[in-house]
Image 1: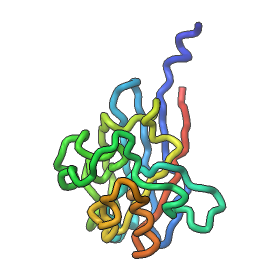
Image 2 (image 1 turned 120 degrees about the vertical axis):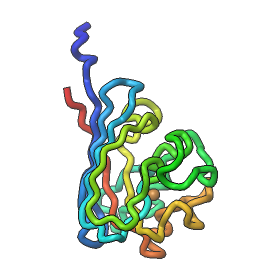
Image 3 (image 1 turned 180 degrees about the vertical axis):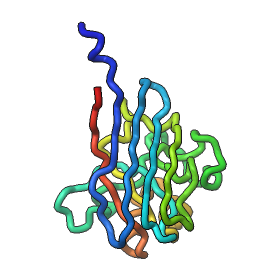
Length: 183
Ligand SMILES: [Cu+2]
């Protein structure tokens, strides 16, 4: 077996942004060592103080959908370990295992008050491989009023977050994570 074939670095990025407004940006993910941390490189622009939390949601966007961010399409936060979100500390103050796997804003701080936002994080709990991989799911940036403390984001058995999205104007945009393996 050619062992060089094993030396791949999984990388992921976000695809087309769906949503109103002038916000834009990209989030790059890479995991250079299997079981190692994922580097999360966030570059968002034009948030105009509209954004709050942001998360990986369960399913990818359905192309051609008129409501790509609807809960029916992408379901709730990616939470494969069934973390109870009400047990999470405030954004950016707890340890990485105290948030849902997909709760990027919870782990590292949310986007409140930001316009342009550049940051790089190391996340030991956001894999690009294996059963908990975030690849082929979606990322949602929510409006400030759609934080994970919103009433519809605390239920574990309902589809949250994105139901708030349309009913209360709760979003800035949504991306699809596109997998790209770079040798
Ligand atoms: Cu969300």
